[in-house]
Length: 173
Ligand code: SF4
Ligand code: SF4
Image (cartoon, rainbow, N blue to C red):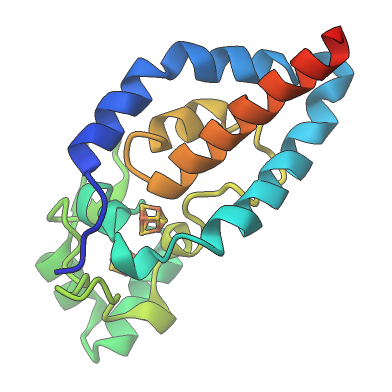
């Protein structure tokens, strides 16, 4: 299994940085909010050019995707199973009444971090970690939480904090 990241340290660092993340978002208050999506979109491209998800797989092992009915229908079809059989084998309802996989570690993650159902993967998997979305302000809480799991989100946030600090320094000169 390829895992070059120290996920325990990542989580500890992200928890420790929570205040700094909140402070960072305050830089985007008011009219500056429009820059938040742009900044994240740029960092998303930058960081994912450096971090290969196949060297990580932490979201697939530690966060279950929330499933929607079309995900279930697509996966059942791809696995050549009847939907009720697929549901009884793989799906449960969680405490929030969401449909999720029975196991926290996704049943379709391989030891090599490849997704065995990649072409048919759930919508939530396609969109994770959402850092190229157009509503970064709305998903602030989730993004801060994702720093505990996703090394790419952690890195984006870290770079953004450093850039904002540099901008402030330059302004003061
Ligand atoms: S379906 Fe694929 S992408 Fe989604 S959590 Fe499972 S292994 Fe990861
Ligand atoms: S999205 Fe983040 S947590 Fe998931 S595999 Fe890629 S780097 Fe890892």
